[in-house]
Image (cartoon, rainbow over all chains, first blue to last red; front, side):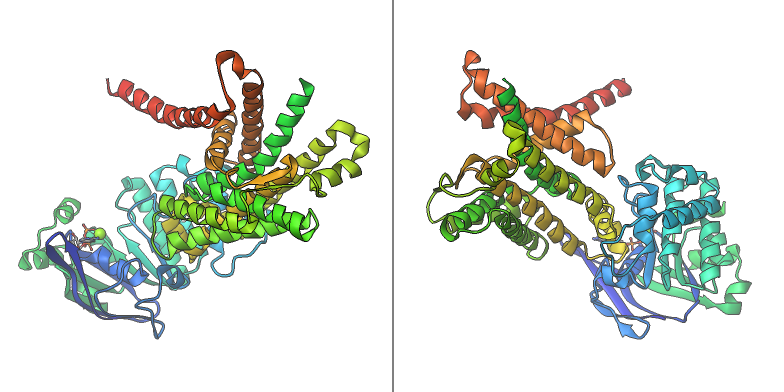
Length: 261
Length: 299
Ligand SMILES: Nc1ncnc2c1ncn2[C@@H]1O[C@H](COP(=O)(O)OP(=O)(O)OP(=O)(O)O)[C@@H](O)[C@H]1O
Ligand SMILES: [Mg+2]
């Protein structure tokens, strides 16, 4: 489904060159769910950006469904790839209403001069908002800018599901939310991933999530994958094991220490 | 007095179509587009020269003017999205290029339409039971039709994507849309409307002049801003309505200033200065108010 071949990415910052990714290889089958952990600056977001096409790798190859998409623009990869980032503002259009945002998401290819929101579509939207349980069904005509971060992120997840991507990239997508909303949004995401069997990569600083979800776990450091646990190996891992591995790598992750208490 | 108001209303509606064009770029696409100062004249120039030299139908020339304006918008869009020239500079370059092109189209700096059958004359003949109101009724119908088509367009799938492109471009890309193409399309629509307005104004006033487009962006902004301060809504129907109301108010104010302004020493040539100052104030006041309220909160 998704294959990365020795992906390298170097950023120029002033005189220096930062190697954000130093040769990443990854092969994911359909339905695989990979969780990615690693300290700040390890290159996790850069990796997801390279897959989504919002940045071009310096070297290497991105293959989706057997097709080399390394230089394909991001908007064309969007037919397979959905992405949710940490920023609740990124996934929705603030001046437009909830209904309009949902309408934008439900239709990927071949937009035409048909009416975007029909009565039937509106009723579907009400059901979709009811299933969120956030009382948004009464607010379909409110601009999204009036919603809280948690509500916006829940809407973003709903929009991602409507688009039915085959690959889902999650970049700490609950990190900016309060614990209640974070739990709700991760539940929604889990339900979606399970129901659709979508191939997923989830970046997180929460070790428990990283262990509880998915069938494979990558630990990144300084642009490299330093550990790769699949299947039973991953089942056997504990938070303590991970903490130990981190210290072995001399990785200091402030966020990690905070969240594992 | 009544005739001043009728003329102001006629002009407010005709220039209102250009203001709708400015509204699309400035409010919807978030792209400050200066092409309009040129494309307004392009519409007037094409309409006039086709009417005078080639005896075209006065309605047909409106469509041709729209298409020509759209091409101008496409050029600005390509300069910006394909060649990476900033939005303001892309607009300025198009505007300057259009100055030469408009002169080419016209063959001379101005064309008189006194001897040809303009749309206004056709309407005066056709709507003659309405007497002095015939032109106003016609112009009102045309402008309302343009506005309603626009409102409907913005409710379609493509229209929705166009609005979202100006609101959160990254999100629209993630929805699988080529936003560059969307911007080019939006600029085409905007400048098409501006050129349509130019073609109508030329036929209305009986001439085309290569300098008649100067300040189109500013008067368009004035209409958008005046209207937006009166009707605060995010609904496209209300936003477009407010633009037309803004244009009507602006033209009425201009009429009165030209007619009675001499009392305070106002001359017609001061108009662009005064309009620009009004726009500056309208742009600065909200930002200033926000800064003040933040300062108060900080205390
Ligand atoms: N646009 C850029 N220009 C220059 N350097 C960049 C850019 N984007 C990322 N980097 C650098 O690349 C490295 C990897 O960054 P990245 O954002 O991928 O880290 P991350 O693993 O997502 O970290 P975090 O956990 O803090 O989100 C960092 O050293 C960062 O400073
Ligand atoms: Mg990151």
